Image (cartoon, rainbow, N blue to C red):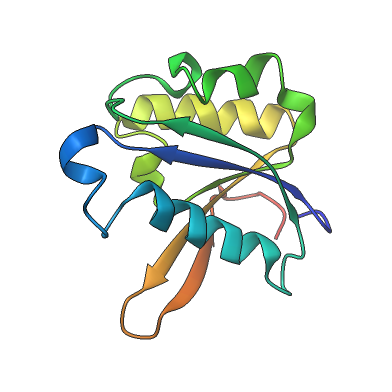
Length: 135
């Protein structure tokens, strides 16, 4: 991954009213985890912006989401890494995820999922890659 990346944070919730109050995957919790990873000494990046899709199903293609979609088309040159709290916040369909992954590879972008370990309160990044991808 590049030094000092520009991180696009993506937040998605599918059932707005019931989940906004749920601390387990609230928009704030998703943002905090991505911000913590972005600003950490191992990454030393900066937040380029936020793609927020509230009350949007995980079945909707990420390219068509109102918050995230424009970042792939009109704003692709503004970010280096797509940061999500969990991969299911990006998509719940393997085919859609594969298309986003392929787009990111083609455009020199990375996808990072940041998970919070509830036992230690630590953020553990997961960089998505395939065999043959550079470490």
